[in-house]
Image (tube, rainbow, N blue to C red):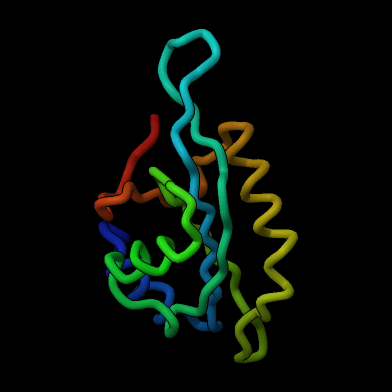
Length: 123
């Protein structure tokens, strides 16, 4: 099953052999210093079990509580072991690595969605 939208991402995460924790890095589009295009700057992170997530619209509503505007959310996954999902405390280093990867433009291994829930492809 390929991931074509947010719902299929959640379904795929729930079907894995080991429980997953999804990692979210929300980014804001910032103008490039030279005025040529925009770059994405991380503004907040979160981790959630797939069972804690509903629709993309619910994710957007929950993110509004943080009162930080975002344009694109990047999503990664952290697999568990021995039938246990990773604990939230185990996500700090992977989230930091995700932020670093986004800042460096190394985003090919991450899924990305815009505020409307559209799956984005970066070339």
